[in-house]
Amino acid sequence: MPLTNAGQYPPSEALLKTSHDDPKATYLIFYSDVEGGKMWCPHCRDVEGLLRSNFEGKSKPHGVITYIGPYSGWKNVPTHPARIKYGVRTVPAIIKFDSTGKELDRVDKSGILDSARFEEFLES
Image (cartoon, rainbow, N blue to C red; front, side, top):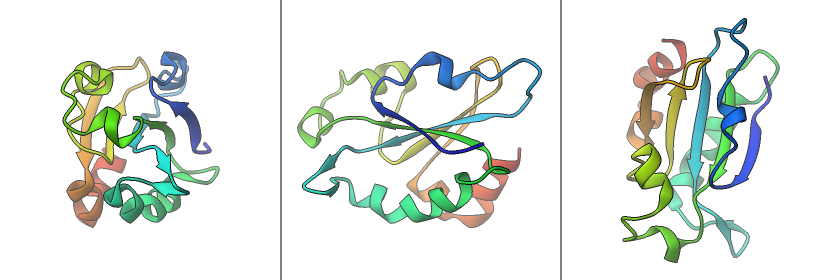
């Protein structure tokens, strides 16, 4: 399934649920906003190519990208809706959901860059 760009946070709940006939997971990818032509978060830029290679393509897992907002709306803002609803502490972050929208697992930059952990995350 192709990589879906949900745009600005919050993503549509419908994007996180797949058909009950489709047991595949959906991965919600949290990135920083683009400011000045690039994502303001250097860690997001570090993993962007790796994520694209793992999520783009017909036989790849379903990934949904959402942008958490500008730096000023995220950094040191404990009331950001993504922090409250999904418990996101850092970006990039990826949360894996089953077909009903139930959270199964999550990784941040260190888990994404750890090839064994990331492979386990995508396959389990």
